Length: 182
Image: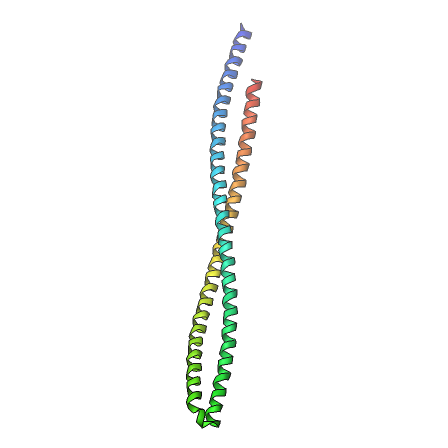
């Protein structure tokens, strides 16, 4: 009779342990599902930011190409400016030497000065554009750096979530082993 009572208590304890094990298994499964959802969202964000990073990199390269083209244009404009300055100097000498050709020289000089002024304006505009592009490039670099930091943070979150998921799976496996023994 005492053995029957002991067996009854053992059976009751095992039944309670089994119920507790089933509850833990359900909680563990739910937690694992939640972790998997969080991980899927994190992976999607990582993918989106990767695409944004690629787009920004392409835009940065495009801006650098434009900057190179503007530099080349500035150099050509500077060369043209030097040529025009030499032409103006030559025209001024001719005015002094050949009074007869004064009108023609004056007209050439006026045209050259107008072109020089236009070139100066274009040079100033191109310099401003180059500075604006440099500022844009710096801003893009800052954005790329910010995105890289975000991606690093998300990768760390992903590693932590993966570790939590692994721990949950181990706990679930332990609970299933305990449940199987019972």
